[in-house]
Image (tube, helix red, strand yellow):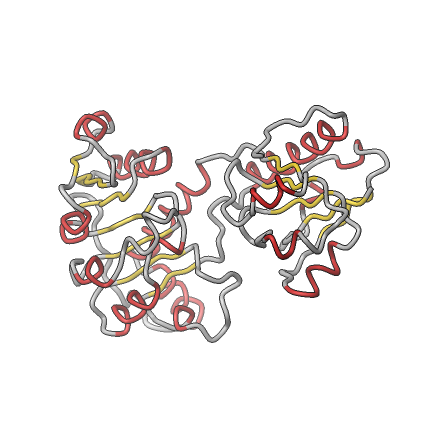
Length: 315
């Protein structure tokens, strides 16, 4: 039996779990991002595919070209890039793993702090012998943090903002005054109100048909010129073309991004060169603790499926 681990960019998947317990299973990992015929060729003959989040979509068209596939394991318990209906029709089981919320929360704050204290600019100047103290940082204490989406991640981000002494404002389509009060935040009456009232806006919503493009030209135009936007959730929440235009005009002070419409992002994409952008290559959930959980539970998923008692089934 052949098992292929896709998008193992750091080539560490086999070191974070003991795959040897899967006797009779040939395990291999692919470190580069593949698509098209190269992807089909890499998965030829595989009975099991392990995918990292939504790095490689498993579409109906791809699944139809993988007649031997019987099990998909994804990190996390949600993966919008897997065609679950097509998997069901083809008798392909899909299983998930646990996923810790701390790493994306921590990266959110790394981006916020990097933006308001100009860390990349100052670090580059330090290394290059440039100006000593070129920039003036922005105080978080007393500033307003706007949290869009007050679920598990948004609530933890707000808690950190409270520790910095920030005023906390939140909005989501179904947020109630009671839930906001429970989290110790004020509820904005609308997304536009939150965008216009916040010094830092951070997004923590699930991407769906109702939230796709939620932050568009009007919402970005409502932001203060000195405000910053951070997105470690899903790229589709923001209209990227509108964001690029706003940044080109210098209408907001900066943006921190960890998610993109296309990943890896093309080298000529404007987000790679705009000076107000602080970006990381989708590192939100990439931590030793999460990787240990992902791959250990991936091994458990494969073992349980082979024993006829699959666990953590998504379909």
